[in-house]
Length: 300
Image (tube, rainbow, N blue to C red):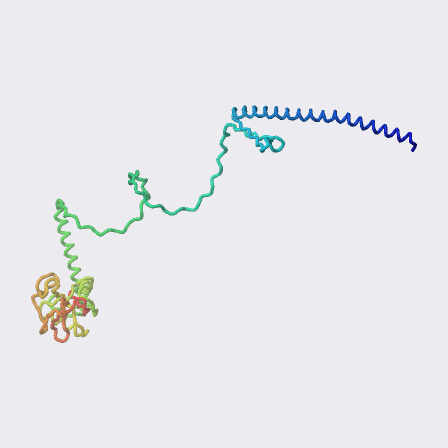
């Protein structure tokens, strides 16, 4: 490169340097203007924001702008706006929860007891109860009027009753003949060959159409002894002192008119001997317990 070329290059460089200095002043002037304009604009924006915030607060809104210690707002100069409107409508009720566990029974209240409620409907009838005890017999009624009976009919009825009585008497003799017992006067004594108590003996003889044997004289007493010897057992005779101790009577309650007590009897041993038996060996009598079983002899 020659000297002339280097000279031109220096001149060009000097010219570029001058242009650069001149243009730099213009550049710095523009930057200053823009910075001042930005500060003014920011101040105006803050004033506008302050006015708008006051208006929002008066109308029921709240504007919150958080500023730092230098007066600048965070997050690029932004503000949070929280609207305060009217309350909304209630939502629909939720579903019922599950029933909890049954609690313990509480203490009885101390209040006054309420009035009794109206009686409920009658329930169905219950089962039939047991039969009650038979009541006392009623009073005897008045005697009725005598019916008009034909005399002939009265005679027929009387004859019928006599026939029935004769048949009953004949049956007694038939039974006595079949059993082949001794006869004294109009009485025939028959042994049942059964041993039982006084009460059961009376029932047994009555069922056969007779009565429990009861000697009223020495001859009848000997006839009973004859039957007692055959079975070698004591024989029950229908004489007791159940009503009055020491006062022996027949079944109809009349006092005894004939006795044949063994020596030392009756003695009411242990206070329980209210009945009488005939001893087979000597035909004598001895008092004994009415629950003791002995030979049953019936009379017809």
